[in-house]
Image 1 (cartoon, helix red, strand yellow):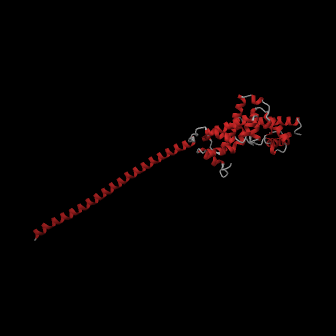
Image 2 (cartoon, chains in turn blue, orange):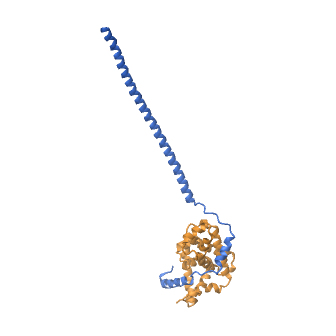
Image 3 (tube, chains in turn brown, purple):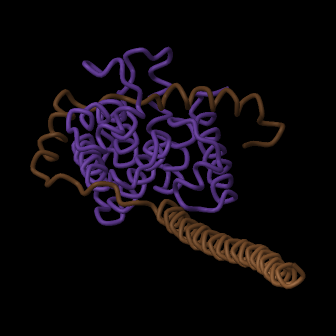
Length: 122
Length: 182
């Protein structure tokens, strides 16, 4: 706060200023006076949410909505894939059944064709 | 802090914010010395200082929801007290004209090592222009650094440093010329 020439004096002055300007107490009834005036006041409103809190809440809400949309989309895709897989399995099962039936049909037909020939030969 | 001895300032602030008037009373007791001393040394009149200090605490009660921490509370109180005192001096110039009160000059002498010199210093500080006086009080009563003083008084740091330098030079010169300092 001062040039070099005054440094020691300034430090001494500053020390003395700190001692001279020590805080002092108000009168005895000060707190009571404040509280009497406070008692006449309506209760102050509760602390409003600070802009930072509000923006964090908005961010959290937006993030939740995005997450919910993504999860719903993922669930939908899985359901479609499960449906396709079920359809594929059903078609495969029908195809196998069809083959078996054809095979059985051919076996039955071939036996029926062979039976009259044996009768006529006898 | 009778009855609140186990509470930290942060606890008191939270309870006061929740609407507990006893906690607000404890906050007043904690900070009244600082607020009153700033007001007294700015206004140079004990009654005006008590009135201003009460108004500061009443304003605090009304806007308590804007205070976020104990440190913010001390900053808020210093800022509002200094600004209110400077405004009051502008509105009531008679406070600047009035002779210094004996009570104001002798305040804090009970434990003084050099009461005459300290009284002389208080008198000289009280005669500084209001802005320079506020800067000196925040520096030497509240022990704030220039950056904090600048934030409290909403003035550039260089202006604060310049006030401090000029005020110290003036005090040194006047103390030296009166023989109080060698």
